[in-house]
Image (cartoon, rainbow, N blue to C red):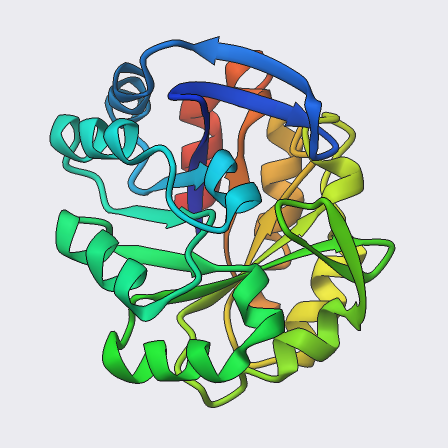
Length: 241
């Protein structure tokens, strides 16, 4: 199981939001590349990046910060936020991003996701953010009427590498992940699922690891790492066990 340390980029800085609210921002590092390097030095094997400004504006905004991270570390990187066109996908992959995460566009234009999977096999992830079981879009600013499971099932057999499932109500709250919702989603599809939102302690890693058999590829951890609530060596030991 992969543990993905998360870097959320806003205005070129490394931040965390509380429940996806853009006015509830905590800045953790003014140098995202240095933060990425510290995660690499801790022993993590993959980095999760989100362009928060891009998610709101529908186009990449924090390119310079992303580029600095790519140059600083050798880890594979998955990136989401404001990626709405094939040209943008290609640009990020050419720059050195390993996998791109398609969120809002997956709801509005699932055919584009399927085309991207054909053009860039193994490099497309779908990000599904849920609020009350329904899909949230536009940087979590809007909630649709489509359920998380309904959207995920649209991409069966499309070639999507993974689904990143985030329970917005838990994101940045340190209240623990949505284990039941994640398990239900994973059992409903054949695509590997990455859990995101609410990770608060090392025991949460064990709880997610125990569900690995239902199709869990990994877990994303943000605030709990910045607040040093996770025993990183122990967490990596659990994940790799």
